[in-house]
Image (cartoon, rainbow, N blue to C red; front, top):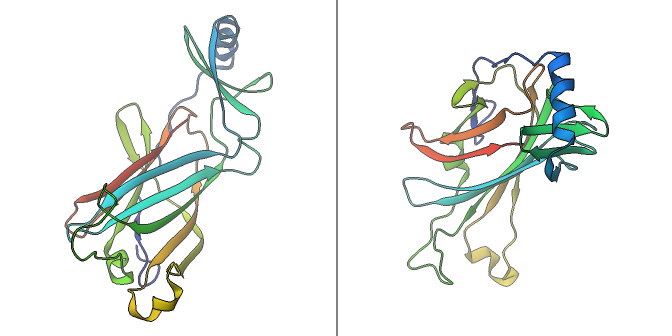
Length: 214
């Protein structure tokens, strides 16, 4: 499904809905976990994600973003215990995501070299290259990947990245940053599931993969 030229194609499928634990079981587990808490993770600001990818033509890029949802992640904490993991907001046990979450991310090219200098002529990520990349979204439950469907695109933009040497701007290749905001249905999805992003080339080669996990 293509939204407009020069944009990532977003593939959609079937949303995975896993069953929830009974209320009594949740209370029983909470009582046990409260006595054996080892570590605390705070999710204020949402779930952050970042990874690097590459295309067959030698272009490298970076994907960075986060998953948010109104005030859902405010004061949400993860407690790791001897008996498992518990997610809690204050005294409230949280087991599922809200009805929907928002995925915001940006894509921009980067040097493939890990050294201080790039050897040879560098190729930059162009609008035409981005138009060929397909993004697939999945909910990952254990080892199972189930495609997400019925997503809603909220915002999309492409901005030019100004060069450091502004006096040479006319001689340098244009560089861009692509920014996306997508609303994803997540009702009844267990909070232990991960949202997986897979970027593929037209040849179905995985160019990048990253997961937003709790």
